[in-house]
Image (cartoon, rainbow, N blue to C red):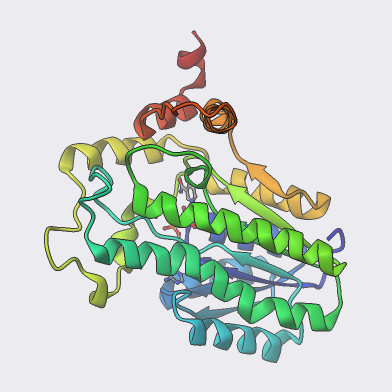
Length: 297
Ligand SMILES: NC(=O)c1ccc[n+]([C@@H]2O[C@H](COP(=O)([O-])OP(=O)(O)OC[C@H]3O[C@@H](n4cnc5c(N)ncnc54)[C@H](O)[C@@H]3O)[C@@H](O)[C@H]2O)c1
């Protein structure tokens, strides 16, 4: 989609981080922005920043885990602006306690991660794509997945498994829209580490999904390491620039770093060669993302 001026973007999870940066980037290009977030105050803060820059924007509170609320988001966007051209299914959460093994996670973590990171994307597609197809105008859809959805390791599995599913559904969307001959492009954003508040996702955990056993807290050692890692990661503005280019150029895969290429390739090669995989630890991969020169030296 090359012509963005005066068109309408809906961005979920736009009260913070990558979503807020995309709102500023696309707003700066002349788009009208529907800023959606489960945290209405955060969405309103993004709208205030946009309004100060002369961007036409509204805030809508939406929990993407709830299909009725995503339908209501679409209703609000069409009621206000009469069209939607760009949909960014971006909201996401990382349950704390990523040091656990796959058999140790509480069920609440599986449900929360799946509801937001995977079903949130499905709900966005179901609520918006039929209306975008009916309008017949050029459009674009962006899914914020993660490199975690392309590789494997022992850790962080409630998050990664949902991101793998988000990758799969976005590839299906891409293929389906081509089959249909629709003028709607698709991009799959797979960031490495980005300096946002994702590490504080527990702030958004619903009360109904507090773990019945154990605690949702990160171990203090891992919390300190993660805090330092996120602070030295790339900015959400850099990611928003990459997404902007992908939308303009109609590019599907958007990988923000090459630090995980070896891990992605090694997983695919092991599969094709029918041999047992060797998965690196997430921490070593993340460190190579932040310090590529140390890795190569
Ligand atoms: N930061 C990273 O290192 C990184 C890496 C890979 C992928 N991602 C993905 O990027 C996306 C954006 O995250 P971020 O890094 O900007 O984090 P962030 O925490 O700064 O922003 C996420 C936003 O989503 C909102 N949100 C959470 N649950 C929601 C729900 N149920 N419904 C609607 N909104 C909800 C939060 O209120 C917040 O404003 C997520 O999908 C995340 O998984 C982030």
